Length: 192
Length: 318
Image 1: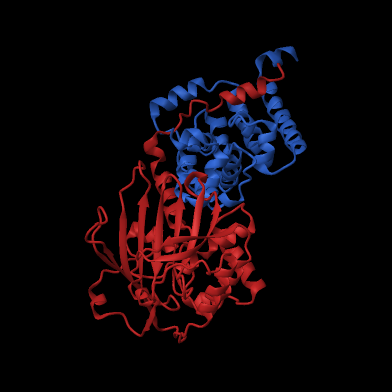
Image 2 (image 1 turned 90 degrees about the horizontal axis):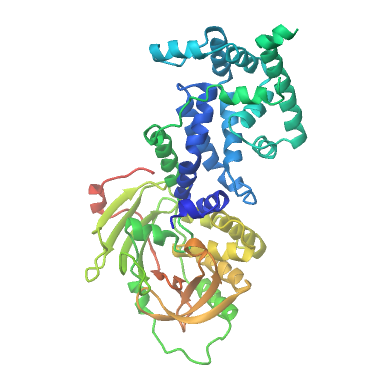
């Protein structure tokens, strides 16, 4: 059986302490998930650089990895979150553009854009606006839950914060998102 | 509105973003591997060796043949600690002019790897190498790898290489070693620290033993003696008879750990002359897989590289 399927992430990382090239197996396991997550937040222009920086940083920190944690994905999401922060202006610009135009600035195909605009119905545009309005740390937690599918505990691990803080940040973020959705939800408007 | 609607809607937002193709990820993977390759740290002992076996380069302990070979007498010291203490005495008694920083240490090594039966491997490989190490690492190092004619190293012939001392993934220079403490407690600490870079999450004794790979290259005899004295205090050492890479039988001090490939049992040994206790070299045996044997000869100090080195192609740090 190849190493890439038999070892836990933690065991792979521990191997990479002695055989650094084994770290590439971790890349093979997780890079596509990290890439898609970053692309959803930052778009196609910067994603490749951020993914590359994430794995280089992870590689350099591999000796600090807590091998009691068999799954490394939360750790990788934590590292990538720090790199995403460096592109915060681009991220916010992206959400705001979408909320105004119903299309992402990095969508490059005109026909696709038209289609996208048509499908960007009343819910998604305020949703993007709400994302742009969140505090960065609240947005990080919300998107790690919604887009990276991390559990509260994994988010706490990823960001090195207590789980209670994860809950409070998530609650705050969701309240803002719900508010944004509610204010444009036609059924809500009718009800009020 | 349903409690979870917000999360559901959010999960759908930009959800059409596809996973990247392998082609798209390839540059990031390549960058990662390039970085990983610069951090490849051959495990100490065989330190040079394994890298040399791969890169070509090893030693011929031919001058060691000067030492008379005698049969192993039952009266010889039975304990591993005693062997190491005698080795420390032998090292201390070695006359050795201290080289200057602008000089070279010229020495030979031999390394041989032998897989055990049934283990797929390139086959027996034996390399003799001659080296000129800049004492302080400020000048390029010259390597001359000479695969055995009778058992050529597959895929690689003789080679000559001139390259800088690459910081970060090499071993200490002679000048660095000269700065190491010879005080027992301080040196123990230094060795543990050095071993830790190669062996994490192991006990200190294992880290120190693995740090002994520094012995594979020339060092001040006083430091060598101090290292043997520390090794003598480690738990788990035992003696056995082993042949060094020149085929000479010596008395070896061995320690067993599980640092072989994939966590396999590994027996790492240092081999000494049976009568003079002069240090000859070492061996790592991974039962069921194979062994690597290496020897180092007493180096000489020279002022310059040989004239032919001027035509050798220079390489940079990886």
